[in-house]
Image 1: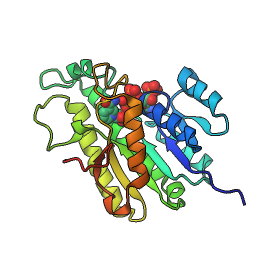
Image 2: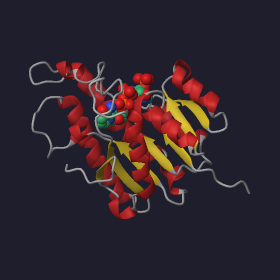
Image 3: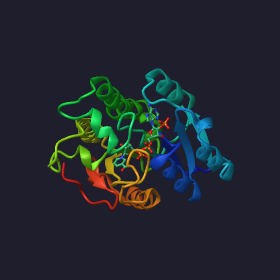
Image 4: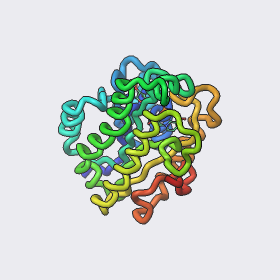
Length: 240
Ligand SMILES: NC(=O)c1ccc[n+]([C@@H]2O[C@H](COP(=O)([O-])OP(=O)(O)OC[C@H]3O[C@@H](n4cnc5c(N)ncnc54)[C@H](OP(=O)(O)O)[C@@H]3O)[C@@H](O)[C@H]2O)c1
């Protein structure tokens, strides 16, 4: 029998935090199911695949397309997924801070709010449910929802960013709920910190690869007792 290579499925693996996770897991010998809306259009993902042809498997997936999520889950039917990283997310058409302009009290773009909820809240729920069986086969299954400190109700001392904040607060609730219903799967929400990506912007404090390194350390040591929690990259509980 072929021995199992640890496998991670990452949504939004073509840039930012998702791409760095793909790179770091591949470097450690993992198999990476690297999902992206249009994998061939990401030069970085194409190059990563060239560097790790045996490990990086680019897969087309728009997470808001539920039929496509189901189709990919069927296509990967026999696979065991050790880590499912629900990473794809959006602040709307613009990153931070410019994207605050369409999600404030006086200038809310309701269509953008709907899209943000679709990507950040409904989609990770859909992906988690569709891939439950793949995860459940793993020896130590881990489901990660990429959340944000901006989703913390306890930490909200400034208002603003209503669309993004509500999407991540909702995702935290989904995380808690799924953890109750799937007692054999470690389910956490990860707050990666403010990272320099298209979404985080250049003024962010943290290099993406540094956050990813800490996140992966946390993923490796988190236990079932911590399931349902929101953790920061170092593994500390985030007040929510
Ligand atoms: N950067 C930060 O400071 C920060 C802080 C807290 C939380 N986060 C969270 O971390 C995650 C990754 O963010 P990031 O900073 O890496 O942002 P990013 O660089 O803007 O990347 C976002 C990723 O999500 C993908 N995506 C968006 N909509 C999608 C869809 N419908 N289907 C599939 N993929 C889709 C994008 O793909 P396309 O290239 O096709 O658009 C891209 O790969 C997000 O959930 C974000 O909310 C980030």
